[in-house]
Structures are given as structure tokens and as C-alpha cells.
Image 1 (cartoon, helix red, strand yellow):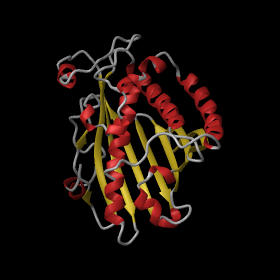
Image 2: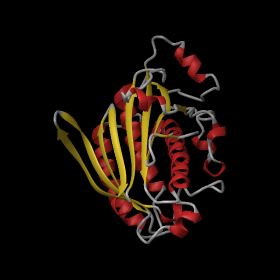
Image 3: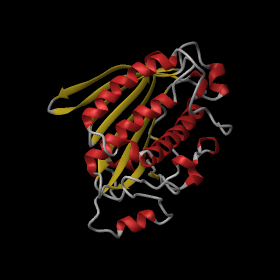
Image 4: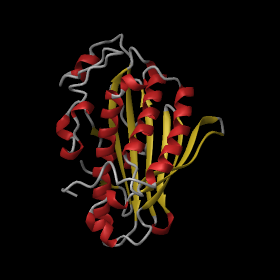
Length: 282
């Protein structure tokens, strides 16, 4: 995966992390699955003083756009490579994320004002197989500099060795409630041939801004690898956890989010560091 430079401080990559069949559950249920997986994955990443802290989770309306606004804090000291921990000043590995989820469009920004750092992720969920170009309507010169990175959730070869779990492998998983899975190597071609079966693809545009002299390229390379890793693992989990969320409603999800907020507060203050950490290659 390559991030092409737009200028000296900003890069953009459009990702296509997920193509799924919606013949049984429908688009609203994908949104439920997405939010369920966010909550569960947050708990898996929190403990020992690190992880995710939810400050705000509330509805918003802005110029006709309606959705859910969240403000989270990510405490990530042990989840970055040793070289970055060594050089990062105290407090530099605490990031604020603000997100506006107006499904099918979502935008997220993670920033650290003291260090002129920004990661912006804009996502469009479209009813296709990932065949659309320039979904985010970038201008011509910008679009020519970006590279599309498709992610196949059934391909375990793209999963970091330490991240792989058989129970989170779509190529092995079989849903008892929907009959979905396991996904074969040709699952996307099979789905494309089913003209009466609805599809959905999530298109993600990632923008990175970083201004630490001498470290910009190294940090940006680390970020691009981590984003692909996160998108891959998240959507593999979403698929394999379908039996846990397929019967939930949005009202169930909102109650779950409130419970998760309290759980995260308790989990972060005790136990050991959990979840994703930097790989040996980083």
C-alpha cells in the first residue's frame, strides 16, 4: 500500500474496505452491525490505563444533516512502535476523535492540536461492488495522485500474524442466524453475478497531516499501514459477529453505547493493556 503525497504535509488514500451482501439484513442492519462492532472493539482495546474514553455521544443536526456526534479520547502510548514512544513528548500519544455519523456518509477527525497532527476519514457507503471512481468528488489533479487500496475481508494473507483469530475469519465463519459464510476466494465474483441481491461497499478517504520535521515520512508510513490494518480487522469482526447484532435495533444500539461508555471508564482504570499493538515490522 502506498500513500501518494498531495503536498509536504498532507496525503489522501481512498480505501474500499468492505463489500457485503445485504439480501437478508438490509442497509439499516449494516449500520447496526457497524455500531455494534465499534462498541465491542473499543472494549477489546481498553485496559491498563490505555484505550478509549467516550466524552460525548449524542444526536446532532446541522444544516439539514442529521446523525450521531461522538467525541472520544484515544490513549495509545503502548500501541505505537517503540521508536515513536521514545521520541514522543509526554501527552503526545493522546488523541481526540470527533465523528459525525450521518449514515450513509460519515466523517471522522483525529487530532492533536499541540503537535499539528490530523487524521481525517470520510466514508461513503454505496450500493455497489466497489466499482465507482472518485466517490468523494476530489478535484482532477488531486484524484490523479491517489491510489485505491481494495481490502478483501476473506483474505487472511492481509492480516497481521498477531491479529489473526480463527473465530474472526470470514473464510471459516458460518452464521447460524443468517446462513452467511464461509466466504470463498471467489465470493465477490459470486455476489456480483447475483443481480437480484443488494450490495454495499464502504469507500474511505483518509487524509493525514503531520508536521514533525525529520519524522513526517516515517510517521505517515506507519499511519497508512495502521489504517489498513484497522479497517481490515474491523470489517472481518463485523462479518463474524453478525449473529450478535443481526437482531438488534438502533434503540438497542443506543442503550448498548451508554453501557459501553461506563464500561470503558472502569476498564481503562484497571487490568492490563489490551488489544492491538505495533507489529515487529513497524
